[in-house]
Length: 275
Ligand SMILES: C[S@@+](CC[C@H](N)C(=O)[O-])C[C@H]1O[C@@H](n2cnc3c(N)ncnc32)[C@H](O)[C@@H]1O
Image (cartoon, rainbow, N blue to C red; front, side):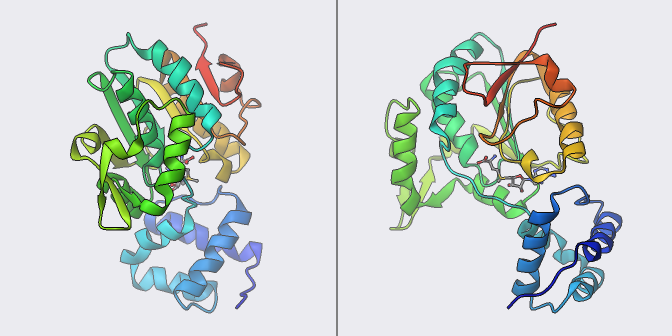
């Protein structure tokens, strides 16, 4: 079934969400929002945006569930192997002398990216210095991240990507199978990460970081919002700290990015210049 959603009709709904829940979706990319809203209408058997609006008025407790549907949560372990190779061979060795090493994953989804970094850092012997924080607004994804449980059907692919990224063992050494279909990271691995709710638009970022990952998050925002968010992230980076973007993202046009230098020629990892 296809329900027509006119662009102008989305704005009153986004204003309502901002007023009612203080969650600001007004500068999210409209193409993505339209697709996600369409999906929600079908999932919740709503016939139009008025019914969506009424549902929020009559049952505000449903908002977190709807927000989870509105965000795009695609992720993987060791996604974009080139990036992880640079993280393991070039960034991690440079962080070794920092005490503590504070690393923040903004928009961590269900945690795959965070465990990827953690395992490479553990193999470099950095885990005792590590303060590792993953944040997101999607509460279901955060629960998965905290549980450290992932579908077994993806694990062989993730293991290959881990080895290609410079992993020294096997991903399976870091957890155990739960029945036939799931894999769970060991408790001592999970204990090394904190996952929390943080809305990068409204909330204060994690301060004094040595490395920030913000991969495939800002790409869903309109350009003025991307610029404001990068400015916030920039202020959370310590001098000489590293910043990692998604493969198809580019912030070179923003003001604060002028103070970032490209590292390692792979175009995803940058360093705050010490000027
Ligand atoms: C495509 S996922 C990226 C996951 C991971 N960083 C990666 O690249 O594999 C984008 C994530 O950004 C999160 N997100 C969207 N809006 C956000 C906001 N305002 N604050 C924090 N996270 C947000 C979504 O919930 C989603 O989990």
